Image (cartoon, rainbow, N blue to C red; front, side, top):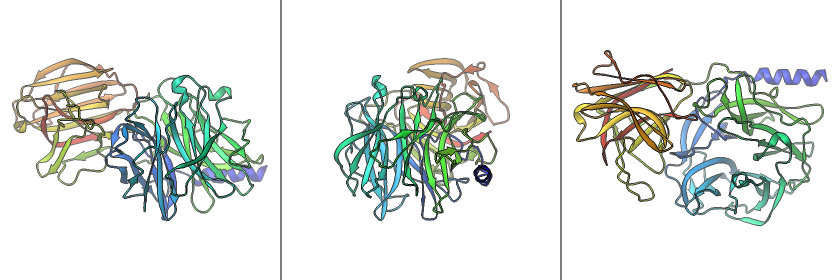
Length: 504
């Protein structure tokens, strides 16, 4: 027992990493050790480039190195969730969940392959599996006979039904499922509530498969997400859940941890990479990326850290920035996958253009956020600025700065040649909150100050003299916001941004 306690203490001390290790919204992570370092992906939801590829030499320092889909696959309507990367033959495969064009509720599973984690990725071109209740959270694993299988969760909780996790044989080229699916586990413990999901399986030398899974509500208040584990000597079961579940729950300054990916460093050391919300800051920064060691007790069952996420600790790369757009667009910038804006950078700054049509062919209506370019936020207290070339504005074109969840939920400030407005959209309904005259200067400086859900907005001619627009406002956004530059006010609006910045 003393040896076991000492082993866990040393393992925890050895992984002295920042918490989070990656700030901002990176939900549903998947991590593997590839080519001498870690490769990771996460849910991209409605943003493009979709399924960003991250690299790290040590689980501490991360960089964006690419994306699986610069544009979503043709069969996908929108929203890409829960990717899972794995080795496949001499290359790699990414399995993912996507909302198909044939449904607005039931997700399907897809797969893409590539020679390296950075691509180029080639999609199968059709769903691998759909299902009446939808299918999400795919996970590939080999059974005790070495045969490839795919696990996934039936998304039946969206239809008020139980949520089994299934397994089914998968062809070696990952292009088709074989035979019939078999249920492994379902939500049948009180702590799991209406959901079990996010399966991740490892096999140890003791002959057991260990199935890590998440249970209860993942997101939005009041989330109760946590991680449990089950084990079996055969992939197809029977599976026995650990009496000590959940093995990871909220605490230490974090809420609702889950969707754990078990990363092996190639030397037998295991770490759980998972997401969680920061306590005391609401849900605005989204589900951030954390790491904790996986150890095994004297009873043979695994633990993740001390059962709670590691306490907040500095060291993660700041998301503060200052961008004059003189070179290629920085990889941190993203845009709505169904409303792709025009983007051109150079010595004059960034020209952001509202698209005439959406990806589905529908016209983009006249709106202040016709074109959107956004970055993740890792904190809820910050000051953001944008400088707009007023002389380049034509007709009713307006450039803006906003706290942006999606096209239905945001708060921001926008300026055309004559007027500056503070505005919001809540559940799709637009409302003007305040207005002021645009400075009669060559450039318009906009400033947005966020203090949690409280926002104030200023305008000025030079970045030194500022005038408050309206009062302090409360944003309608409650979860996962981004900092966004906007171009709109008229169809096909074009706005030149001289610079943009964020200080934390």
